[in-house]
Length: 294
Image 1 (cartoon, rainbow, N blue to C red):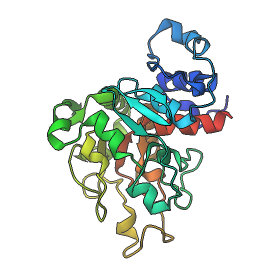
Image 2: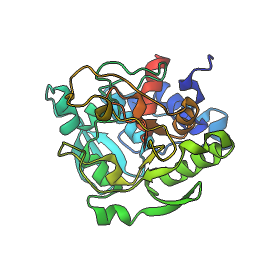
Image 3: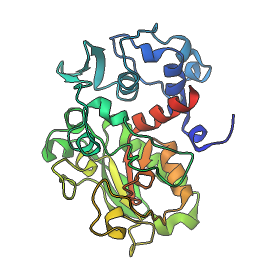
Image 4: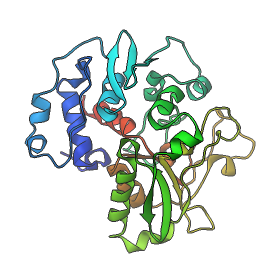
């Protein structure tokens, strides 16, 4: 296969993709755990062979969520995600939403509405895959308040800094794996200083929560602290969310590819770019991979 960025994801991510592509998109209503990267049986491809029989009533996005977050999303039934505590979240509210509404009032289906294009370094107009987050889903997984999120924060050693990051969904372990790989590239160190992880707050100028609220996001390389941080509003003063804007990035692509191999998306792949921003969102990567394998 071609050595495209999509083909350089971790073994665990690719195994999830293989299982989905070979039938798990027709997921049964019972939860299935995402395959472990170190399993001998999954390494031989048997996970895909054991995938549930196809079921046409399960949308691809719902099947991806079942695969990526098996500790929390347990089933899909009657148009709803069934969570571990027995509560449900409507997968698609059926509303025809504007771009802004898909950000401000996202259901799980809206999270898959945009392209996370890993074949180019210049994002397409309004392609902001990952900026749509269903708050009901993320609060169920990571915590519905600052105090609830903090219960799951652990320490991650990050190039001389001690960061607080959530252990939920293996996010902290994934960040440690990123650090271990980046450590083999000393020339990149000047871009890696963190300016923040967990911070319960709303997005600037909006009422929706920032991804930092859930403890699964890290900012690095802010200009003045090593280089690499560009933000769309800094470069496009006074422009609104649907205006045409000018793109800018100073983050090395090698840093981005390492994060993406471990389940993180990069804010620099958004039209409304935030190039210091890395967010643990394996479902976005899996969705893009499946688009490319069809």
